[in-house]
Length: 131
Image (cartoon, rainbow, N blue to C red; front, side, top):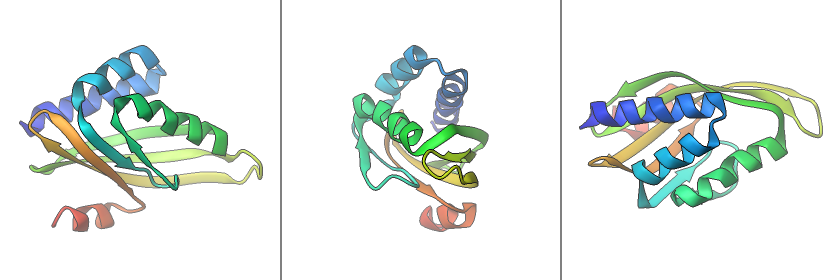
């Protein structure tokens, strides 16, 4: 099942990269469980369910000018899928640049993502996954 989950995350990443909000929201409605929760790296909140995910992007754009979340790789870990990415931008108020690697660990039940958590390092994410 995890290869299908990897492919779904690849499509999500591609839609986000194209800034295709309609395709992204359709993918999230299909692939996120009703109980889905995301703990983002820089946000001091948990984002829940597909309908709330657009709040994550809005919060990022409010905090960072020129914000980009660029997926570099998606790794099948069996029970989990690991998204390796990079966040770039500048502080909206300060202008301070950011160029931060990020690792997002995603847990699935069948074909539905049930939670995701962002980490500042791949090692931290792998440790959380039990590796």
